[in-house]
Image (cartoon, rainbow, N blue to C red):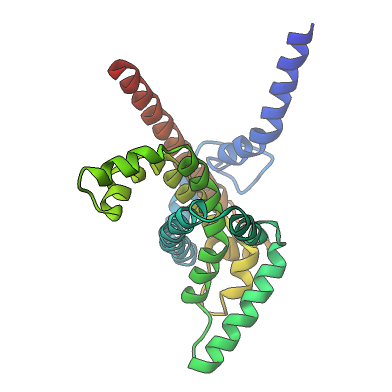
Length: 266
């Protein structure tokens, strides 16, 4: 009885999470401009999607900002996590509290604060808010997530290997790249992927820091929701979901292969 109830509960949770996604994927192949009646199979909305230059431009902007900000946040986050691990207990606690602030702080507060800062800087240097301000804003809120993903891996890493590498002739920098970096690479990759996802998905902070000439995909979609949402957006959502699903499957397969390789070596 308990097993049946738990299975029903899991099924209901998965339906609640994934049924809306399956619905818009299903209707992305609908021939008619309808979200309730399926009249026939068609790829016209996918074709129309790739003909929409404004959506493609916004998608390119989101991907570019997400790529730049995630790489920058990863570099800063790894350096920050390494510094935090080597700090004394009180200093570490103080820095960790500061690191948590951008995560706990409401996004609207962060967005308005960054908007005021960038407006001040833009006024000094006669600039307009755009890609540079959005990218810096995304680096700001993404870096703490990288730090929190890398820190546990650094704590798990064997410090004796780091010192042994130096005893064998490596400099501290060489020891870090040859010994520590491979150990913490899973944390770095997960932090980088999280930073990329958060940047690509962000609306509130991007809305306040993008200015009037630069649009990311969430901002462009929000502007469309003020009118009737076009069916080609279903095609866009379906493509994004499929790409994320494929990447997730590939990452899991890679992890399984690496685990099997380690077991064979042992």
